[in-house]
Image (cartoon, rainbow, N blue to C red; front, top):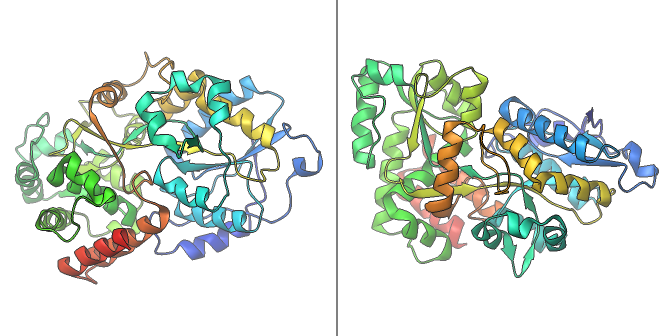
Length: 432
């Protein structure tokens, strides 16, 4: 696996641009010189794969996927274009500058759903519907998923996985020390507040969070819990009033939850917040199921070392997101990109990737017999629960809307706005 040297200078600039943005800062990479394969004329000779999977379980998943790719396409060289950062804000900034200067990678990671709309509207990614037929994905992927990926009859990406965002992770020792049953789940926010009070009274941080994007992830699960799936979906289709009393109540619950959190939150990214639960420094953490891989990487097993359950009030709802890969317009090695997309969608590629990353395969033909117990419960939930689209991870709204919501959330959680102002700013972000 070769790391692309294109990223040395530009990612440093992207990291500066990304300060204060949603998910993270960047620290890697790019130069504007063309890659080795650019002058070879061999469209399948290499593939530059642009992701934000640069560390931890995300990198482990990517490495596992690359292993399958090298077996399936040994004549195509993989070039790692990863740019560090938890939810990819630094990577997205750098990617946008490259797309705008007609210097696209061969393929890039993007969340499936509304996040792709900006690229589609700008004419920056190709319709890959024909590859679904060529690779047999229409039959291998769930019909509901294919519907969510389809825009005006076309599909613009191939998902590598399915993640669930509405999961609480907990340290059973911390809960026991607080007088709580570590196997308990909670039917409502009010029930959970009682448990959070007990953990806080024991002298331990009740709820760990990190930088802004993790707070938006928490926000969406509170909206989902208090409004229900139909009301939550209405936030994005206009049938739920952002300025209404129900949303006010949900924001009050969000404000209360933030009162239980660690004071160093804004200087952390998601692995740090999850680590606080792993180390017994916090009782609970709301995080997508990439956290499952973090627990496994730390040598922890459930239920002895950690427990998990849907965010209170969201049982029976699967808060969906998916990482996916695209074919950019003007990709220098389109055949290399198609080879990568074939592996991404394949049963073997998805089995290897998702086992390492903590998510579940989009490809129903993948062998999941050796997946973790959590992943098996997620597979069952996705097949039978009500599915909604994640806000924080690009499935529910376009990038510009998410950025505005993130900015409003950062202002609110740092004390720069009150609840009424926050609600008005959220309404303006979504309604324009």
